[in-house]
Image (cartoon, helix red, strand yellow):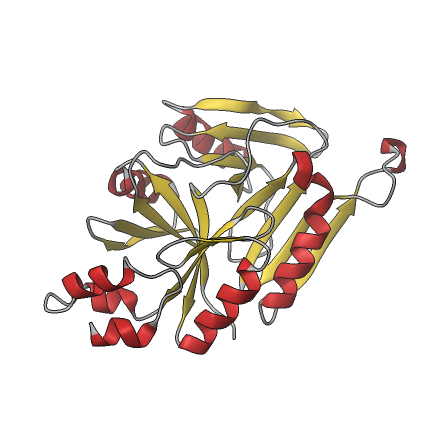
Length: 278
């Protein structure tokens, strides 16, 4: 069961504006879908969904998008554009892990990490999870669980903290892993941070059958929290949306869309047959 997975960003009614801004900024980018609720777009081989969710949630620094820029000219161009109206968490400069790197928050409240390095993959933007505070020692546990849940998944890179940190056991500092065809990064931080994972960032898993919905709902939500309309938070606090792949088609049908919305607003886990019957 290899399923499409992509990032969802919660906006305060700015999803359309953000989608237009990003697709004009990043090369090889385009709008996939626009409606009053969501704007879906592809950026350099990575799919995103922007949700017009209102002020309830906002994106968190615990989930950023790592851009492998590949050249000095490109990292400076992206840094300048993304920083306008936003703020730098770590200004563009040289760091131990990169000769040119920046971490910033753009004008929509979305966090990006820019690296001058290139990546040997068609996907140039990689969702990146930061495990901090009580999640700090759990990075390896979380990644192992994700790799076990999703088919055709593997850990590609794993870097440990050097011995001089004197952690009681081997502690993973950085991990790059692949879930199906999608690359992810995970970073751990021993420092105290005033943020955590939030529904302001989530990952959408599209499912063709009820069996698939049941599988991901149960396995990702175990020991976590189940919410409404296909949303859950796993035991590490990362939010997921387990949705039927047929939902956009049903939502675009003028004769059914109102009844479909009324039906799924009553659901926690999606029930495909109930949506079809609505």
